[in-house]
Length: 82
Image 1 (tube, one colour):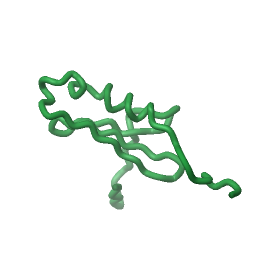
Image 2 (cartoon, rainbow, N blue to C red):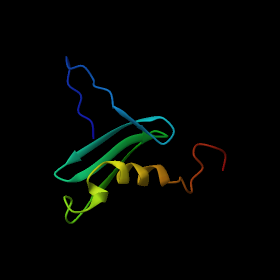
Image 3 (cartoon, rainbow, N blue to C red):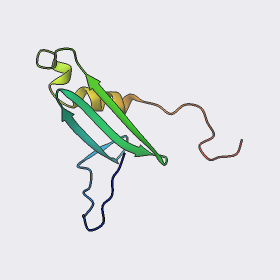
Image 4 (cartoon, one colour):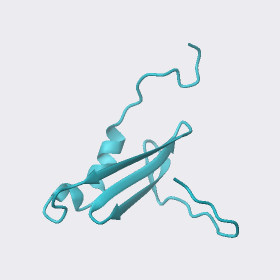
């Protein structure tokens, strides 16, 4: 979700995922979120651990980013001929 306000400069994502696509990678209360746009569609992936302080997978963004990088597109024509 994006909110745009007149007079406020748009800030740019600080990370890249999936072959250079701009992305937001942010922690929020022990949940790592990765948000990006691909082929005109916005995506978001969240990784939440039951005990984030005890689970190495939630101590950095590495696990969330690795999952994003492993995703593959399936189905659809992707704008091509049917």
